[in-house]
Image (cartoon, rainbow, N blue to C red; front, side, top):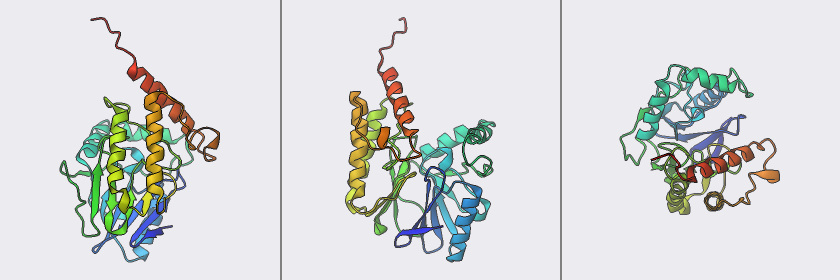
Length: 277
């Protein structure tokens, strides 16, 4: 069920890891950001839009993780966009004919096994590199691209509505998940937080890819929490973070494993290269 969070902006929260799909009403249809997760949920989303007299005018994927690349036939054939780097990454992923099968196999270990439609996965169009505004007939949606979390990751700032759609950042349940394949994942993440901080003064509502929608004032707190976590990783300290350890939300204890894995990966990256010259 869609829930209004600002004028003309609604959220559908999936039961699967609190995944948030965002709908923004426009003049000729809606902008749909990161729809998911199960086929039943996306069909419900399509029905809710139809009942409100809306069709989907455009889609946007904030980044190239499978759970942000989904679609359903009932949502129609509107153009689906991502940043140039996001789309290129998706294209590379799907060039492997077994990619969708591997994702489906991975989901066999979850409560949504067999419920996620893969036929329209990742069919997104690359926006020209450097594009800063969504091409659609509705409230201006500013694209804030950065290199935190995944290649071509982007937040959307619906300035007229005071809504920041943050992709897989600024979550109350997930710690920052770094793109550990880059040369400097720590600085990449800190730079992304600075970009989000530049617009934070105009944000009344923040929507993470997973977790609870944050109200007025929470965007600053979430930026600071994420920054403190990343700085602790950089210094090799154990962060005091409510999203890991005994204070983690019930059902999200596995986030501590994500944290441990990041610590280990960063430690390996910092080891001197002992390859013989």
